[in-house]
Image 1 (cartoon, rainbow, N blue to C red):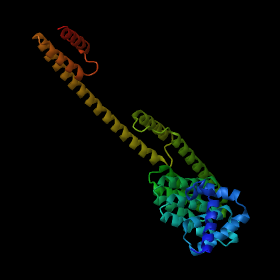
Image 2 (image 1 turned 90 degrees about the horizontal axis):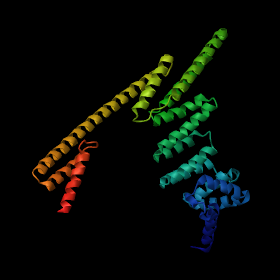
Image 3 (image 1 turned 45 degrees about the vertical axis):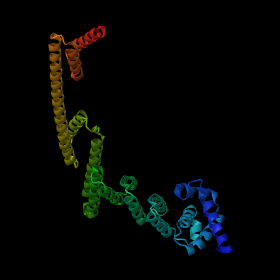
Image 4 (image 1 turned 30 degrees about the horizontal axis):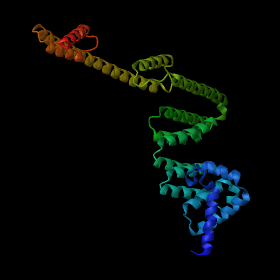
Length: 357
């Protein structure tokens, strides 16, 4: 190693240590978003530019050097204007960093990088796709569903139902059991279909169009209101037949009051499912009671048999043998057996007699 190379490596090492606060924040395994915030606050633009230049020079020779590439991207997130000054395509380099991190087995760090890229370029759908791929390959499906639902709800809150639809469809593709999402998709498509139909209306029927639009709005409001009422019905406690029965009754009452609405089939299916589950629970309870009664009968019969043998031994003067039979009876006897107290006294008396001998 030449003196100039040694000096160069030391400079790069100093840059890395400065950016990662000498490991205080966990270094390359610390929280990336927190590290970016700290670099933004603590590192001035001039020093950020000098650090960027040194990292660029080093990466020219080793373009896939992971820690240096991450440091460069982190600087870019902290000081985007410095990245633009040095003609760094932050999206491209960030994506390359994320892929290299995932390839190196550091999927969590790759996820952090793509999350920052999504914040950096919120309109770039490819970033969301890349992030989704990382999360999915890491097996974090629930986290991905939550992220998609947040995106959909943001668009819905802004009145952008068309933009919310792809996110809802992504959620449904990951979890087919999300009936609430299916209902939301149905509402969005219904709304879009209505808008398309309305846009083709002839101006000569403006008054009719306004009337139809008003009726449709009222229907849409009614459907959403009914859906909210349906969602407000108390959920069941799993395995609780009384809770299931209460929900079945509430659903039946709701169905009687609102016979015509888009979610009618959903209510019918849920009532059928809950009814079957209640019947299954009742069957299980009946079988359990039968098993309990049978066990009680068997225990009682066995205890009675030991008691009979003990009484026979007592009549023959075989008191030690009688005590053994009585004790066996007490061991197998069920709770509340009618002879428990009497046999307990008999065992005590025999033991006292045996001790006196």
